[in-house]
Image 1 (cartoon, chains in turn blue, red):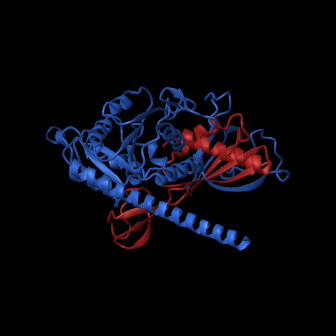
Image 2 (tube, chains in turn green, orange):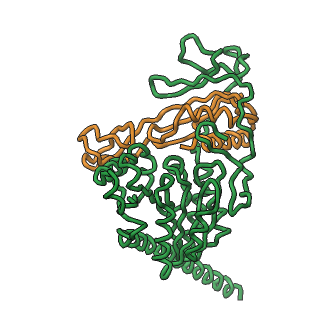
Image 3 (cartoon, chains in turn red, yellow):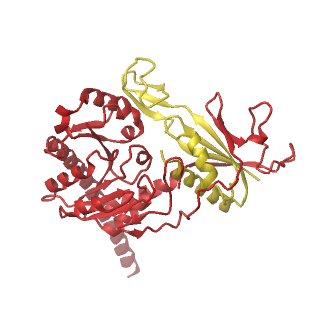
Length: 324
Length: 113
């Protein structure tokens, strides 16, 4: 487990079953007597680490001090290899695969992110109840532990699959890819992914969704967008939830929205209450517009495939008649 | 930010490069991290040491080169330097700035033996 943020690997479960985790061998997060590396910042903003006992006299150049401390200057066989690869490239390739899988089926996937207790699950339940009569809805639930949320969703009649991340603090694209195969959400429908309640980590992980929707509740304080800017920068829509509680809390709505727009000038904002249903017309309208877009993309894909098949068949016919 | 997952990503990239290019010892891992990427360098350095254990970059040094943040100010219709996602435009003072650069998180190069 990570001592910094409490996250860990190898503990993911989908519906209680261990996830297929070949890329994450279980390791013990123990510093086995390694010397404490010294890590510091330079004036140019770059960072370097090196063991304390090998700190160079001028304090600026750190090459030539290997872990064994045995290199002779000028005799080193070290060389530099260009890599130029995004750290999250693996996740992003899984996300791209998910995005293609969803697009082929005309499914609109929304990734709902927020801090714990913002009312995401209540919001989902009300959204599903309102949409189910006309749009098939399926849900992927992410939590560290328990299947409480998936059970709440299933009570609405919508299929739901629970991913337990163990100590993990976010869903990643690989977990969602596995969940999609198990859940098999219906074509031309809506897939709602409720991420782990965490306003920090899920921001960086593309799951293959069409949009991130960040939920901010009025009980949290209007300064959240500035305190946790990454999530608000990554989102396309902000739902300000629990507006029925506005008379009882000191929450400056105008300021909250201004802060969010400061981080992300293109962010759309809808005020809702999952308890009373206030604002749901606008929220459901936003989903409908996105669903229509997803269907257009799918229809275009189908039309392109049909044209391709027709062209291949024509070529095959030409080939056959040439032989005859 | 989930530095442990990022360190896992770095390990994967390093191990893959070692397999493909045929080296088995990495001395230094050089990253490029944008100022707006929200990676906490010290947390990443801590996770890095732990996650590299038992691999070809065990004990390797970590160098993080910071890349400057930049954004597009819709009011000025110009690219401007920014240090945080919520910085005002340094030209007009407005907040119509959309981050465009400085969100990178890349393994740039490796010093190998």
